[in-house]
Length: 275
Image 1 (spheres, helix red, strand yellow):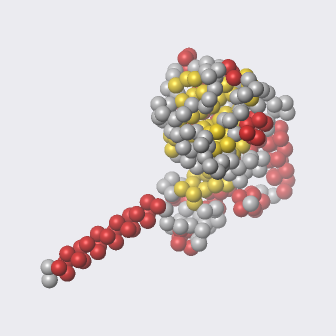
Image 2 (tube, rainbow, N blue to C red):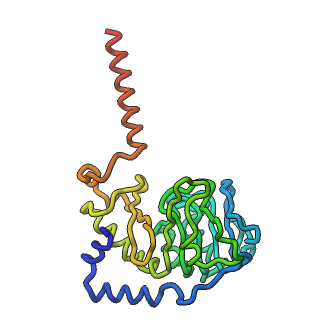
Image 3 (cartoon, rainbow, N blue to C red):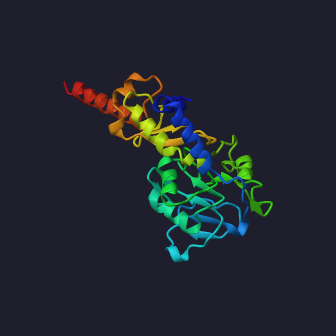
């Protein structure tokens, strides 16, 4: 809601109507396409993450050259990721690799940590990947990966079925929802990122969910679930951390503070003992 309010302050009504019309025109195709299992390409790295339970799906290693990549109608990406590096690749390189498999996939599943990031999703558009929907989490994903229970049972998969059945994660006692980001929402991300960062100077951003890099969760019209936006340190003044009650010390900062207290206490004890 806070992000939508930022958009309303940033743009007047005619501009917002134009953005909505563009999203409708550029959005998901009206007829959902089903991807058969042999058309769903699973791209993985060597991190040991569990692969989706789909023996009929072709699997490829993320580092393969272009001429070794198969074509398909959908892509599942699984492996280890952090901000800026996805299965060991940059956002641009991963998006480019997906584009070699399909430029119009029915869906892309980012079964990896922090996959629902604006940086990566924007690269999809720049590399010409127009996915019907992108499914990803805005936080960590265990090595067991997403829960695909019943997803591959019918021999084909659609975005609508994934939106209903795909959860995070296998073996979890309390399943977590997965963000469903259609093409129409991705087309609006440039505006959303610019708006969020421009308001960061006044500390008018949601609470940080990750420090260094500074990541916030935003809601984009049309997307089911949050998307991560990176706020560069130069755009977020230090006073934002001290003035906002919603921002707490990160775990790393807490342990550094505890360590500093222990060192000072040890020094004082040693000094007093030698008096």
